[in-house]
Length: 368
Image (cartoon, rainbow, N blue to C red; front, side, top):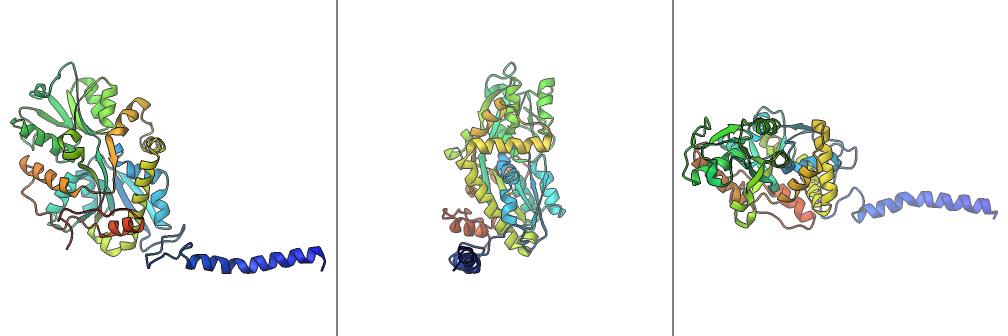
């Protein structure tokens, strides 16, 4: 047989065998078929049960899972042909309003607005479906005016928004000092000034505030402008861990599109793993996303100071959510809440189990 004929024959046989090889690999769990009856991971371009998933998050480093997952395309990859549509917010209460108005489906958000939103809707609007971050909140002050914690009395200290997580934490800290502040107006022994994180650095430079209890990177921006860190909120918590960012979903969306929620959580878990395995690349990725959102990246001095204070975790640290609810009650921002059912961690624990990671607990506050 001529050599050219033998070569053509071999090529034909290889081409014929290729579909059989692909089928064999798929049956072993190496294609689009999943093992152990797990749901099929969305292939690139494959649409799940929803055309889009509308995501809310903040341009804060405490929301780096969202920043990095969006920037690196990790979230979109898991969603396949279901389009990720992000929107950013300054603070939690405005994001809860968007969830209630059916403007977003899933959000990264702090514990206090999660609690407030759940309670005000009588447990009907949201579920917490995962954790994202712990820490990353600091009290920073003008060192010329404030040298000790006792010096805060009579001073003007900013928080991002009335009733947001940092606002509640600061009001609780004030109460534990024995000082009095009206939670509605912010007036009292300390003036609590509700200020958008974007404008807080300018307010500090102008002297209209004397400090701020804020998340990163706002805290480190103020430090770069001459402020001093007087307190890291992590130091107030057992094991220095407290939930600063949850993942929430509207109950309507969770019920209608459980496959999309599971795919999103798979992306979040993969993003968290990538962040923790590649801290320098993750820091650069988060900064690139912040630049695309604001037009300006954080300076190295700011982001290098801010990043180490944040821990990225899938664990929602549910026990600390109850504590933060108690703080909101003490501050007069909330009646004693009934939080049973605020968590639904079954989709997350399914994803974690499939990834060979330990499951997480809901501290008795999960759906029955």
